[in-house]
Image (tube, rainbow, N blue to C red; front, side, top):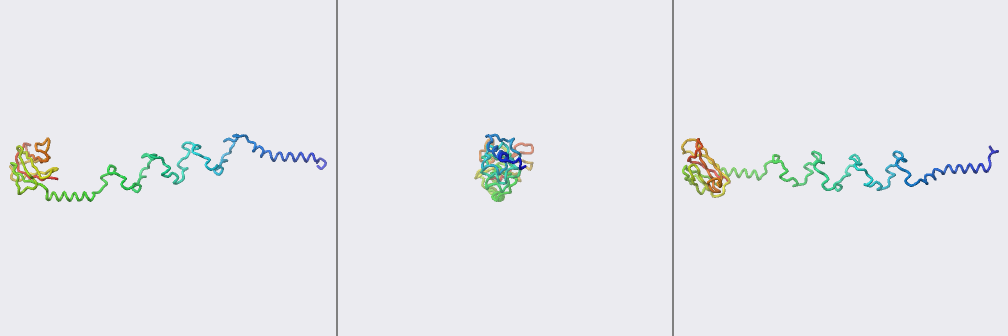
Length: 231
């Protein structure tokens, strides 16, 4: 081997070694622009650490590419939602609980009335109605000819028999209605009494109370009666 070793052989061997060791680096530095595409990248070659900060912008994300499983917990906050973006159809059943509603946010039109108990003021109104029925503001004892018995009447200013079996009663206030019942001392035959507010079509003017008396055959008849007025 020493016989074949010469300066020329040694120089050519060193030149070949240098050429082989530098050709890869030279080739990599001499890549043409845009010559490396998707086909040249092996799977998994581009990792998150290889991406420049803010390199992936909204325009680079494909429509519907970000699915629910890719969102971090608490990533979508209130200020990230567009106005009117959450519709009724997007709310899960039972997702809006009482604790999520601000005070006074539910109006009367949205309340199931059957779910409410009686308010204190309504209970007081019931007591007042009971007290008024025990001591009414106006009542009358009327004879069959329309004569008012003052000792058995209160708050009734006048009674007039408009026609047979039809009476018009006026109170000292504007009543909302009246209840009537027959008195003893009539003919003894079955009698039915009806009461309504005066004013058309009643012949009694408003705000009087009209009282009609009918016998078993439905004909008008005179009869004594009691009347109790409602405020």
